[in-house]
Length: 102
Image 1 (cartoon, one colour):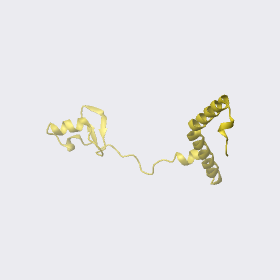
Image 2 (cartoon, helix red, strand yellow):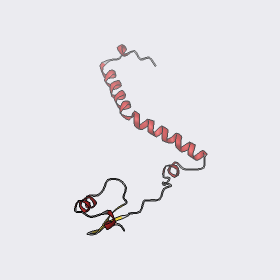
Image 3 (cartoon, one colour):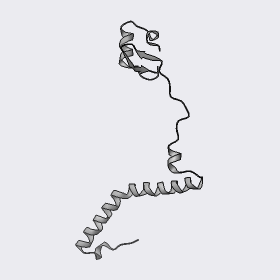
Image 4 (tube, one colour):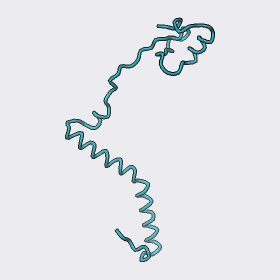
């Protein structure tokens, strides 16, 4: 599409600029909507809804807590990741993880 900008008057140019600005601002949203429609159609062809396919649950069960804060039973730790402050404090005070085992 070739548009001769020199043939437009000032009002037409301003209107064109506003339309272009709006199109740029909404481009990403429009592209996402188009992609979603295509994915919904493909999911339907396979006998599913898109929500069913995107809401699949993890195959791994949640990890159970191995350690419990003796002063606050609501605070637990699985033994994975960064140690909670209450575990670090207990270890710094000379305690062991076995002391906190559930």
